[in-house]
Amino acid sequence: MKIKDLIVVVALAICTSWALEYIMGSKKNVATEPDRPGQSFIAQSPLMKAVNFVDTKRIASAIATHVETDNALYDFSTDGAALERLRFKRQLGDEMGTIATIFPSMRDNRANTCFLVALADKTPFFYTLVKRTDKTETVDLIYEAETDEAFIRKHFTIYKKSYQIDLALTVQSKQARALQPRLFFPAPVMPDMLDRDIRTIVVSDETGSLTKVPRAKLVDNKCWFAPAFFGADNRYFVQAMVKDVDGFVTHAYSKVTGDVDLQAVLEGPSVEQTSTWHLTFYFGPKELAAMASVDNRLEQTFDYSWMLAPLAKLFLAMLVFFKGYLGNYGFAIIILTLVVRLVLLPFALKSTHSMQEGQKKSAEMQRKLNYIQQRYKDNPEQLAREREELIRKNGLPGIGGCIPALLQLPVFLALSSMISNSIQLYKAPFIGWIDDLSAKDPYYVIPVLLGLSFLTQLFAAKDTNQRIMFVSLGLMLAVFSANWASGVCLYILMSTLLAFMQTSLQKKLGWA
Image (cartoon, rainbow, N blue to C red; front, side):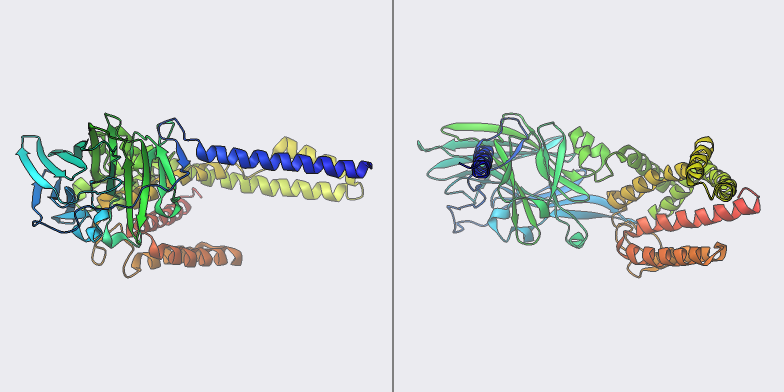
């Protein structure tokens, strides 16, 4: 055999070995289920998402049960022993109102029912309200349903002073056949925010930290092994299982239907006789105090910039404080912007001073470089050595002036993130046409003013290039900010105007 032929045979053998190892390894990864709680994997067989109901014909009218607490209005129904409507009491502008995240129109499909318990076959839908008990701190509701194969009891405990809901779920197999219950509940939906909201699955991973997966990035057969926290959220609300005392959840996954529907699915263990599990849920807004009273991990659902979250929370506390005195979140944003600019003033002055010093050093450096180039223009090697020596002794001017300016970037990101994702600004009015600081300016007045604020700096520009830059920035900012929350636009507008006033004052006082 020739050497060339031998090399070809060896190469083919190596490639075949790698291919087999890859294929076998991939199959092994798919088939092997993880054993660490919260670990994700792709299920080898299709997940159970369809629901087959045994009682398709109604035998009695549904009975609605209304529960009112300090914070919310709950409407339960014997249809599915479900939470049919959920409304949160909120201060909306000058009046008290409600924000709904679950409502009957979501239940055109029975399988979209909140707290539906499904079995592999013959899932009951019509329940009986057995008992309601009103206590000082809680309201208890007990529902029961029975088929020829199973008996199901749901015991809800609704807390009056928090957003906590406990569920004691009992499943009994009436035949030798094992049952595997699944519990469904939806992501919060706000119809007026469908075009600017993102619903995500929230799950505690194998490290114990919360991971968020947007609806658009969910993989059909992806699931998590026995997570200790699982649910869904949107920009302002969370609906999640936060405690599983008896180990009900063996797997958790998502179900996406239609254009907006997103459900969390908790798959339980097989039941051969009778089993009872106790689960705790948080159905409520993203507010620190409210979430901390139920589970501290809920704080991780905030969509603040991850490393800047502490700074964003500080700004939110300041914003709420100023609003308490001013009575208007728009004016509170203006005062907060002013305070932030005052705190950053020393850095701004340092930046200006460093830039001036850098300009002087640059001019001096350029003069010395010109001298060296003229002196050693006929000796390239000596010119290079002299240039390196000059840079080694004097350094590169102008870099120090950028550092104080860069320190302001985290502040901007934290403030913008806080304003965009804080429920306090939802439906919060400012003045005139601005009736919701969390939504875009309906008449684009603030974005236009924001663009014009950059154009005013044309008068201070010294050359044509600077003027072109300000015109471009002004037009780009006006276009991009047209779809931003008006609260964010207001903050950027005030910050820009204050920066312009600061620069003008520095020039008048001779500091610039």
